[in-house]
Image (cartoon, rainbow, N blue to C red; front, side):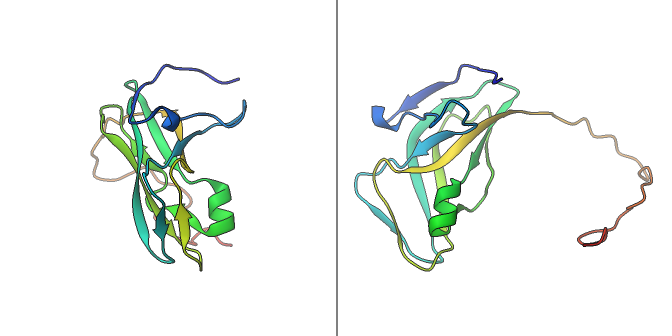
Amino acid sequence: MSINMRVSITLTRKELEPGYATAGAAGADLRAALDTALVCEPGAMVSVATGVAMSIPPGVEGQIRHRSGLAFRHGISIVNSPGTIDSDFRGEIRIILINHGKEPFVINPGDRIAQIVFSPVLRADFDVRDELDGTVRGGGGFGSTGV
């Protein structure tokens, strides 16, 4: 069961409206708001406009995630994935793509380049102390719990 909420958006072009590819999709696809094709060379990053701005309700964030098909087939990912769209941000959403593949990747106008997933946000009240409660792991970092 999904929980629906209303998110107001503005678009630079109607065909850029985010949408869910299937009834069970968690993420709504975001498209490239380009006038002409853009090439992302291997190892390069590009910032791609989506033509979408949103009014996300307080207590919710939009998480920007890569599309698994682009990642698997072409090595295309998002540099800061998941990226967070805060509820008080009203600017155009831009996607920072990186090409981890071996070939140039062409982004065409209207291509689905990322997805946005909405999630509730918990905020912390920080309680400063001289020491923390103990655990078995303690301060052990990367690899400290074994393979």
